[in-house]
Image (cartoon, rainbow, N blue to C red; front, side, top):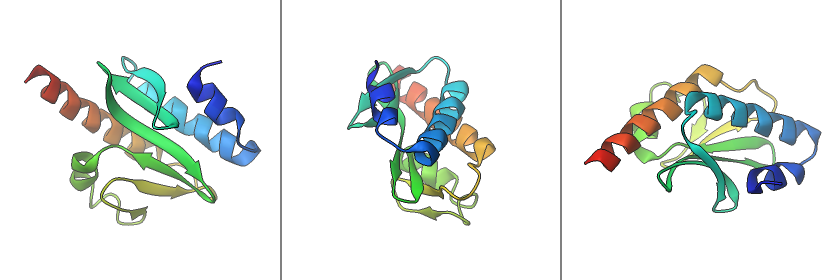
Length: 117
């Protein structure tokens, strides 16, 4: 069992279902990224550098696409609770798949640019 599967297995149905949705969205958005369990939460990495992370907390999922990506999507995040490093998606609302996809792709573009110099 992978570290991500172990992480998902610890949650009850609703949280696990939402985590699996998030997993599918970010993996589809960055299919070349490697899935791992970094910082004790599901993480996608490129060349051993963290791309995005996500985790379940109480009544929400937290998504960590990086500070630059969050700043670039500031207007799109107006309806969501967010900080400089993460955005929270309440469990009782549908995940905004298009927004998560766009942020994941943006984070990937930034990381690829940084890796190529």
